[in-house]
Image 1 (cartoon, rainbow, N blue to C red):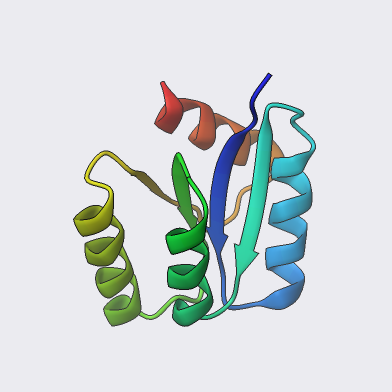
Image 2: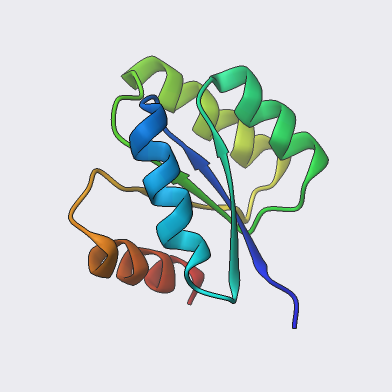
Amino acid sequence: MNQTQILVIGRHPEILQTVIRLVNNNPAWNATGCITDEEAISAFKTQEFALVLLGGGIEEQSEQDLCAYFRANKPDIKIVQHYGGGSGLLSAEIYEALR
């Protein structure tokens, strides 16, 4: 079974690691975490992501620029904003986006 690749972007290292761990608790998903816009764009260029998960702390302009880049390079990419709320909400947001 192929895992669904998920790019997780967040500005806070500890929170990012927690979100990655929660995503990776589902054996069908594999998360790659990035803190900077540059890391996220580099990862997006080299891996085939089905979903981008935007965490808290990303500046509005960065979020707009990242979304524009992702959609320009992969128009069908799913992008979800996740600002917290626990693992149940996180899983629900991912499942909903991947439907």
